Image (cartoon, rainbow, N blue to C red):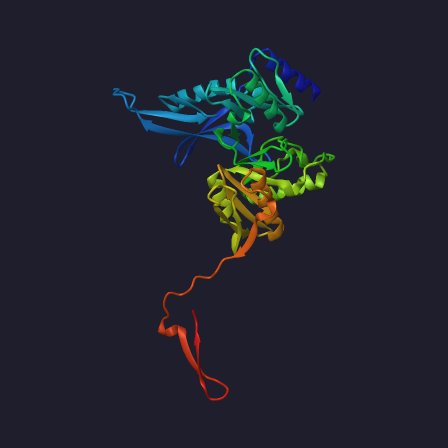
Length: 382
């Protein structure tokens, strides 16, 4: 394995590329480009890029439609699928030196400047033209290095201006993270996630080697991938938050798992999770510290595992999870106080939703029956 790693590094240093084979497939909707690249959580799938067509807006005697597809946020167009495949191959040679696709991109939007991030051995690297290559042992570390470089070089004024786009393995589309896992008390915790597939169906999983959540385990001879080779994944973002909290608690790190929550959850990712939880009819209520004293009310939902969750709609959707309602109220209060929406974290209360009163009664809702002493009583069913 040392020889192959040396060959790969030499090829990358010399600027040569390993071509990623692209196969043309037919589908019910048209064409697909199938790549010989692992996709899915567990590597059981292959990446496929969908090809679409649109009418040519310019008058042309022969070219009536244009074939196009997206590769890592860039659109390739051609007159037919074979010419398009050649363009995609050229894009992949630039995008994936030595055959390694990037995990994500950090972008300075005002300057239209971006840096890709790759896995290289046990490190995460980001090549910078005209500067020393940035390196870290996880995505949180490389994010700090890239943001520091972009601020120092004048591409952005503040690290919060830097945008991140993750490469979705299933179709190589560049999308926003499905969610980013953070902590109320540990600013260095930064775990992006991406939607994907698994043998059990669609899942949301931690992106690449975001941070080693599991301690290394001995690989058995003749066995499949080791546990640490597969990124943690779950059917929805709430279940993945539970997995991340459990793994952080099991490894005994410095981050308190109870302070970890899912931030910047995309609306469609939260809607998918909402369908898997049940409203308890209870609410978290807090009066915010703004001039109007706004009243915040959050629904408490119970998951299939028995714990409870709530979503705070700030600039983004933030999802919190706790074993019971009191712990959830404490988490929400801590989040609101940390972000200066509340003066004290203890100002969150738990209320029950009052049942709506009936506006009218139908005849079928009023029943008369004999009491024990021969008297008639009326029973009203609202």
